[in-house]
Image (tube, rainbow, N blue to C red):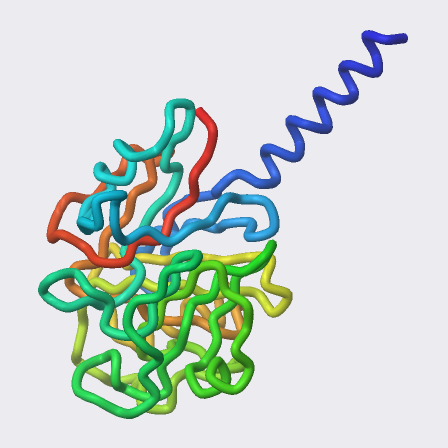
Length: 245
């Protein structure tokens, strides 16, 4: 019977690994092409990355890959917030005991300051998109946090400034989270889309009650299971999942 017990244990372990695996796939919604990656925040090793041990920005997905210990790999990654020319985050950024920047609550130029904006917070066994003023009130415990903007979806409603007939179309990427914080769904458009179309993807198709815009023209995805790792501009904050080889 020992072989049976071992087989059952192996099946349970396999099922758990599959359940916690990053699921990346292409989809079409309302005539636009996207790639989404769904992460189990309760099981996957979801992190933010910015600087190496010497304090220099990683800048590229390959820089993070080289810094990981043997036996680990970056199974998913995406740019995760706006940044200055020297790669400093525009707003609040938290990585463990390190905090860069501060929480910006006022309106400003550009997409970041198109209020309401928000914070992507990775905590213990969960991930949440939280509107900035709510984040300021709640001060949740975030092991990692990246402020960006605008919010795409706020408590089930699209950002009030998004127009269905907008002509502003760009490649865009962002993240939405489930109400219980266990699912984080990252999306990147593969064709230029409006904010209204991108927000609608999260609200109406992905069913995430809160979602946050990360960036536009520098939007990039690392999804090795899809044989995809986008080259391009050097990045600031990067979100990714670390897995065992």
